[in-house]
Length: 199
Length: 199
Image 1 (tube, each protein chain N blue to C red):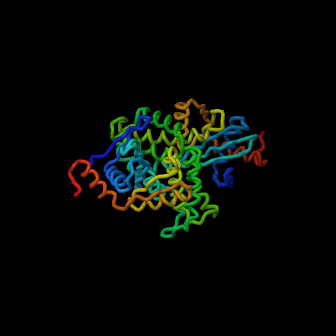
Image 2: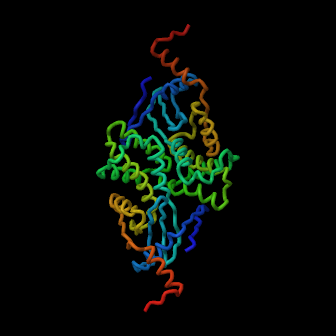
């Protein structure tokens, strides 16, 4: 598959390079021709399918933004290495991130990752998940804005679990796709092209 | 001056450490007791003053987020070293950043810094300013949301020029404070404390 490009309503171009194979696999395996799909990754793709065709998609840089903020700003400094949160930080972040009123408010709220640590209002081990939650909450709220609160998470880089957890916190319905969407996708495409004839 | 802390309406703490001296200086030098002030920096402080007292402030991590995204994500890769834009990228970024409908939409729009470069829709030399503009536009829209479209930029780290340029693009009124607000602030505080008696 050569990739897909798309122009958003506001004129901005967007691209995916291969992820469409997994969408084809998920559609075939799940017997669907419509739905909102997410492929988690450094750059997550949210893909709308209607009548069996991709009609829109959007790339969110959430994962890479998280890594850059955690690794290369002041925000990572209060995060202890190797300690993980118990879910409280993630929950708080997802709820707050989804409720942010504007793009600018995200740039301000990020500073809370520091101040909540400085003021001992969130344990250090929760700060990484809180930051992650802020970003993924903001992403989920925007990506599901026009939908029915239901989306399908395609297994990729383990991030489908993160989307499932965040969806649960926000009361959204995250449906897992089968694990082998890449293989299923190649098969579906080959079949559609007449390269595979079922016995 | 020992610093100021503040709790936002939503319960989040915020802190500044010394910038309040410059606010005192700007108020004294400009004969003001009210206004919205910005102190540009890695972490910019937007400060509301009413009846001579700081009544609210908010820290935006815009500058540090920009540096992390430019230096440590895929977005910096298409930006040629040492080449500067002619204003077109900044203008586009500021207008688009200020118009973003949500926090999540910022995480998606960031990918345009890459796609506009890949599709040759914005010259490489404009991409850094475009990214900067997206962030500062989002910040300005949020920080001036409750105001009369007018704010005072205190000279700091040269960033007051960036705020002035962005305000101009958005039709906001950016008033420069005198250059020596730190000194003026110390003097105003000493005078208020009775440590300086005017001849």
